[in-house]
Length: 121
Picture 1 (cartoon, rainbow, N blue to C red):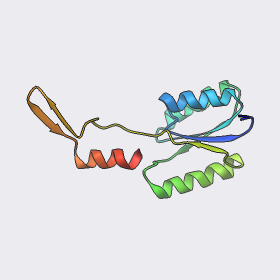
Picture 2: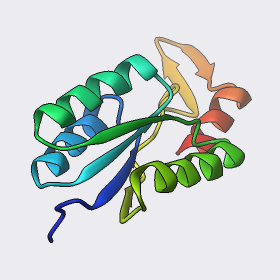
Picture 3: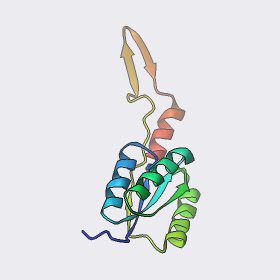
Picture 4: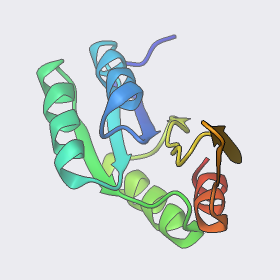
């Protein structure tokens, strides 16, 4: 696939797998819309994308908030001249198990934790 000058948005690209994908795609010529909640992490990803020889822009967005998502993708398109691809990478883990039993103690994931995981993922 030819990615030269194609704009690719990656949610959750402030760190981890999202950052690795951003840098890899930048090496292939893609311009990266770095989307995450943490500006400092996004700035680090942007610097790595630019070091790989491409362009990047950062966008703070909570992907669990529909209005923020709509605003963010309008901003990506306006600032970067369009959008050619999206990687929905953002995800969270709160407890990992709905109910966790260890050494006779039972812990439950709270409803708020469960809802946060569902909303983001």
